[in-house]
Length: 279
Image (cartoon, rainbow, N blue to C red; front, side, top):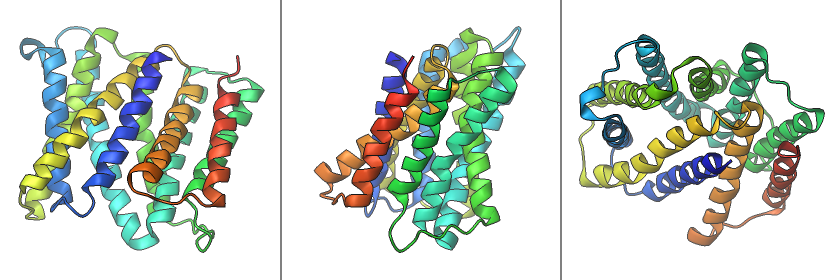
């Protein structure tokens, strides 16, 4: 549970840093590339320069799954941008967060996890909280468009890769898996930034570094947490706990107001956390 708490704190820090970058960062793709570069360097530090490229049993799996994961990371970000433009930020945020369904279902179907009835109730409550906390009064109609469905599936699949590696990969190659994940995302992001002809401003570097450190640790700590906490508990707890922290930060740091709807959502989150963690 300790690693899960660290993962939650790191994930919330990423969202807060992203919020801080609004209005300051000049080029979002360039900022994202810097973020991934920081993740690559941090992963390289833990891996050790002499053993960045893994060898032996499980090496191909760590590299291959890492590259797939890195691709999903970047594609999910681009899909999020596309959906914000076409479907609005509210629906996009809802479907991105509902991607938590994918790793939970993956754990149940492929890895035999069997949540108790009370934990299933907690999971459903968590999904209700996610929808409620992102929905605005004037935008309660959900139109099921392919872009939103892809965002849910691919974003959730990226999250699920941590569970897949925890089950099938070698624990001693975890850092290599993370290194390959962020290296793939970085290279793809740089290629996309060059295609878009985005320059690198000092603000992009600053906020890229600010986002990159907690971004790496959120992935690292979640991977370690999954070795001790069932995925059907870890993923929704990770997702909705970060939402509560970010909401609180919004009130304290950005003077955002919490209406009745958001307060009700936070109450649902607390109820979901209780139900998910009842043994």
